[in-house]
Image (cartoon, rainbow, N blue to C red; front, side, top):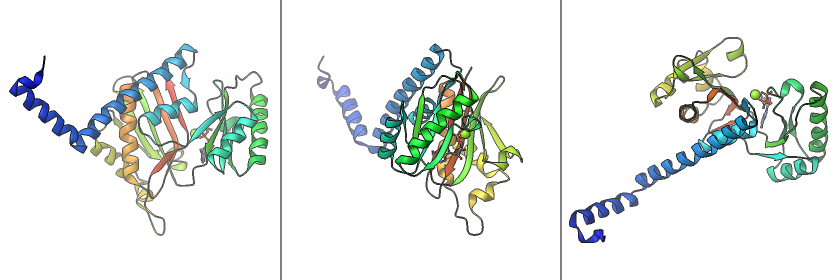
Length: 269
Ligand code: ADP
Ligand code: MG
């Protein structure tokens, strides 16, 4: 059928073409396409973990999932040997961070599996061997997937974004500041997902530690809009993947402009 022959169809087509030329509409369509790809990549990684009998995603997998949802993460690559680690470090640019990737190790620094601020090839080679030695000392038969080489995020205000699946309320998002604020003062806020922008904003401003983010004396304010964006994207992620039992972005470095997730953990039901 040649739709051009029908006046009403022609009008509709013209409208569609006009709206496609509109940048906002195009961005909306693009957003839809991105959301779709994000879902499929995340689903694939979750299925892969399940098929290997794993209850959680490895850091590179969790970061890939986050990244697909637009959550900023540190650049990374996986090395299978020392030479690969050096190649990746040279490509990334120094300083770099090396981390163990193993389905048998959930808390990497507890076993000496994280080495930060490596400034040159020599330090990378040394750290590579050291990490494997530390891990073996801790768990002789730990399965080693590889060693993650990642950019070293500059220091910033450390925040934590988390999510848990509440048996009653479903996916729930958590926010707090890193270090003593969460661990000692338990200064955290929660909202049931999906979050509205207003709720994400409240989660930040109602923290006792909010003045730290807002900037005090000679510290510059942290990028609150970057945190709001991460909270909203995390909400979208956990809503779309109900098989996520826990998500932990800890820490996220927040800067005067932008933010970067340094560690990501995703635990499955
Ligand atoms: P885990 O929580 O499994 O012990 P992390 O990946 O959180 O391991 O690393 C431990 C600590 O090392 C982090 O809390 C952070 O302070 C630091 N760190 C890790 N990765 C980076 C990075 N890419 N840039 C800067 N600091 C990092
Ligand atoms: Mg961590």
